[in-house]
Image (cartoon, rainbow, N blue to C red; front, side, top):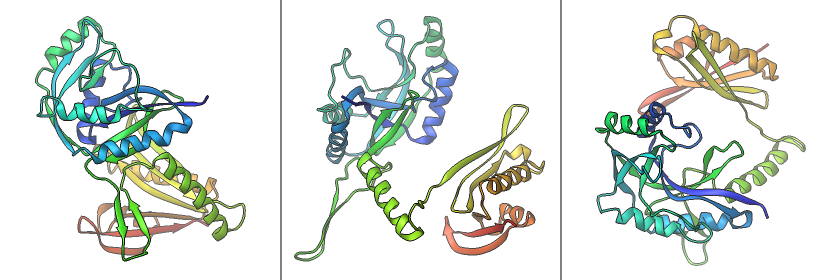
Length: 328
């Protein structure tokens, strides 16, 4: 019977996660790049395909009953000699009771499984560290501390390449918002999440496919083909351009050059590569958005792009401009 391998975690917010990944790289964590920094609530468990939505519902129910958590990470510790694991301790300010209560709420069918060790909240730095490396890391990282606020709980799934990715999440302390205006009016439950859960993903794929065919004609579907163009100098990344192409349009979502390499032509090479890729994919129009009046705006106009629309103000009180360039 088909099964999926799932886990439930509290993901470390991006800024601190980047710091922790640096520590993981320093201590030689073999899982770096396959799983993001996290606090495990439910370790890997095999769940039948037909129970996947039940697992998502467990996540929602548990999250609705528990408030966001502010926790302190550190100091560094180890489970040795029982297990050669190096980790950061996690303190919820309540002797672990809040984390344990949340863990117990998600550690139920179909996410329940047999465990060999008691629940100890932690953020793993290395799973298989040698005694010498453990001893060195305990000294070198003794002063590391961080404080984070966690407001979502995530359901993770192991992918064929053994990387773990979030497939659903639920906001702590927030259940569905019920909308009902007047007697006999339409009743709706509205939820806000960071990820599309499997049911939502299937709904979108089905409905958007039908809509695209009704708008664009049978056999035609909207498909965004992504790309990432990376420029390197002496083996190190000097700049990146990324975006997507669809329906004859190439959209440049972002182009950034390392500060120390600006003015050397790296951006121009990335832009030329993007233009070539767009032409190869049959696109006749290029598009992007950037801050109005900034250096990037001037850069694109110098390379033949023209203003198409201005949004004022758009984000952080700054105006944005949409530019285009048509290919012959």
